[in-house]
Image (cartoon, rainbow, N blue to C red; front, side, top):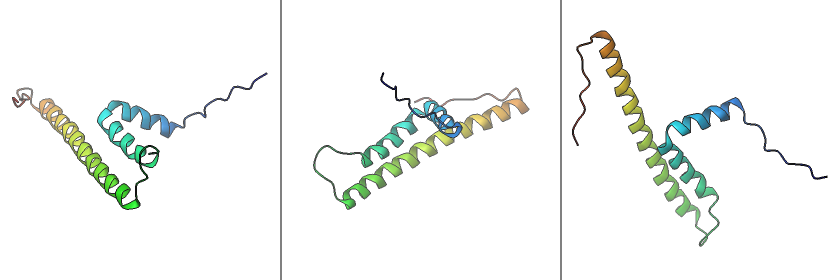
Length: 96
């Protein structure tokens, strides 16, 4: 009889992280890119300097994504707060 190998159960912290990443898929993509750097097995072997340069680039992208998402959420909170204070306040969106 074969024993089925079960995957380890996720902790509450891991479950919360997964839920948050599902809500912000752009951050999931950035984090996946960073993790992929550590598991790159195809192509020529990169030097530590090359990996460091790639990591710096990915971290900058992650920072940019994080700031953009934070700004959107902050704008939504401020807008909701203003609308709660004064019902005549309308949210206007920029035309692109």
